[in-house]
Image (cartoon, rainbow, N blue to C red):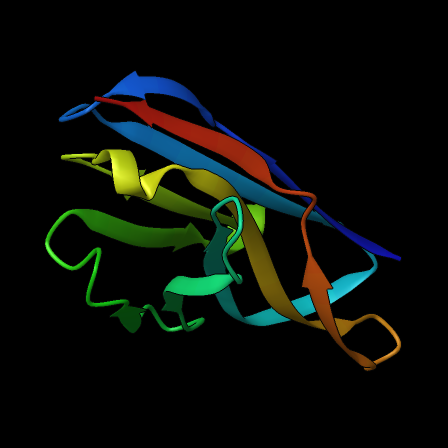
Length: 120
């Protein structure tokens, strides 16, 4: 079994910053890509950012220049630094990881999500 646990969500005023963390644990051999997605009330889940094991990152246009994704491979953890937050960034943020297990199975794993609320 592999689990992802997010932390760092909360309430922040517009223009503020938050840092989300997502730690993977369990029967992990290695983790390939890791990413963040978000779902606002009444909307579909959307891509926010992703990062390869080697550190190459991609971002949604809506967050470029404001959000930064990073990872610590030794800790099986991915981070999302969110700056200049806007009310439209309000959503449940979930992390995703492409995991190779100790039995060499490939799993796409999701965390339970953490709520980010940006007040105007």
